[in-house]
Length: 205
Image (cartoon, rainbow, N blue to C red; front, top):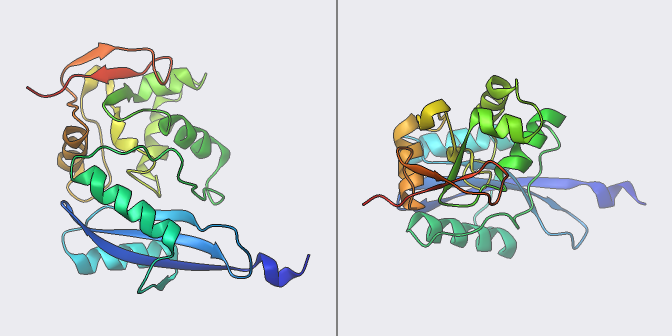
């Protein structure tokens, strides 16, 4: 195969949501019909300028004026989700090649947690057959390059406490994302889907 066919081009753009300006970065093949894959996602920073700086630094890509159709479709899904029309992001193709095998395992497990459900770090570790790795799970989630699409906000500390969240606003942003999905960290009931140890979270009254 000609090496030119393997070259990729990285790009990013900002878009407005009810939470503020988000950023999304993607990688696309320059000479093929393979659709672009998402490489980074940036939740809103304190200002649009800071969001731009963060996603540009993370992706190392050029700023695109118009995203390709597949990325535009993802942007629309994110907007709908943050407006309260909850979406399923499991079909979005993401690029995690730069992450280690353990982190990829964590992210794959987290993507199976449906909106409105949560697990704790310890439960997720046990479900991965790594029952002593709760701290490592938390550390991997703290480095999640594609939050929301890889929904690390659905993972809580023991006792269903919020735990950490690395996005701007910290646990307040985490709580807001859970609220949008009809969930709160405070009252949970057991459920068996989608993960063996997943929990359904009751809607706030």
